[in-house]
Amino acid sequence: MNAMTGITHIASVFIGILILPRTWSLLRAAVDILLQATPKGVDLDEVRNHLLRAADVEDIHDLHAWTLTSGINVVSAHVVMRSGADPARVLDEVCACLTDDFDMEHSTIQLESADRRRSEHAMHP
Image (cartoon, rainbow, N blue to C red; front, side, top):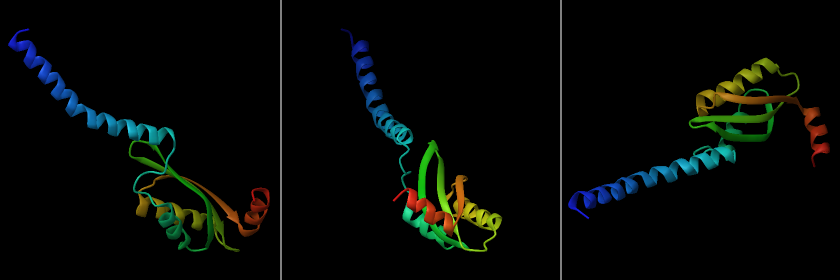
């Protein structure tokens, strides 16, 4: 074994050591995406409480957040509106809250009336 071969082996090990932490990080992120885990840094209680402050929002349930792909978070929720609420205005306010305050531009929001919430609760106790 000559000196050049020894240097090549040392360089290969060094490069492997440099790559390993990034590989582990990418693997963890990929597993979180595949498992549809709540994204790191997203506190669903905070999101829920913030959405409850929107005009004419009575309740939030079935709130879920996950990462669709690296850097793109998605949220879905059932939003119970107060009686007489304007659905378009409620939807606009909820979506603006998610986009502006939580950087979640992709959302699926199901608007419900209070009586729908009661029937859904009876089906899913």
